[in-house]
Image (cartoon, rainbow, N blue to C red; front, side):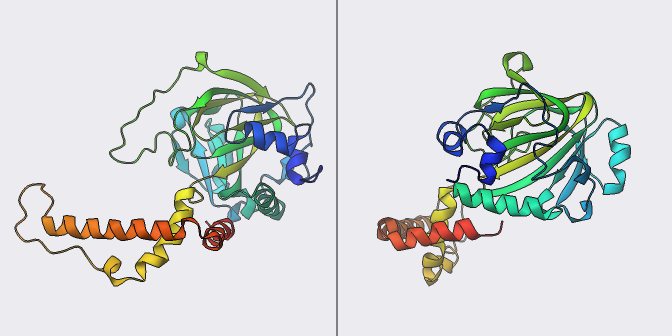
Length: 299
């Protein structure tokens, strides 16, 4: 990888290879400098650009105590901050072409099969986020002000499919929300970087001057090995009428017992599925095609 790639400029003095081999998706990384460096990330995003083109972003949320939040309009940002809310802007790459290009270049440099995007967080003094975890690798670039972070060393769930508090119906949590006292701490100043693996517990609080941070998100959802395999299997299977037809009709089913006709059909389809999987396992061309499609897909 080039010594002065875009990602290298963000991570300096850490090399991209060190980032990939030792930290990314593995363990937290905090790059704190002895002196603040205002403007260090101007090649990506400047502080005064936050208010530009907010009508082009994906969403704007006002986040209050205990992470209660609401969708808001750009014109409501000032009032919401006055009420103590942190403003979270998702889809900053839609408002700023440099960020859109950066997302594409960084995804290509890492050959990352998930989606890379940018968010911005504007917090008034003393405000931020309560303890939670995200379903993505969160890489924070401190633009202005300071922000204190608390974070765990290990994820609650490796590569979660959902954020904490957004668990799907019927999900039985196997984790407990940790106390801040048992978590690591770091204060980010302008020019600092914090990269947290998906699923790591964290909380944040802006310093006395408030905080503006740019977040580079690596979202693994829809970019996983499961998604690649499904891209291979789905068109193969759905070409067969047997995979498109409904399960057998079964009148007067009593209780929860699986009808024999339904069980037989499912077993036959699973036998076919196993055969298809074996046929593509060593098909290098098919595997490469699935990977390439995943890399190029719009999510």
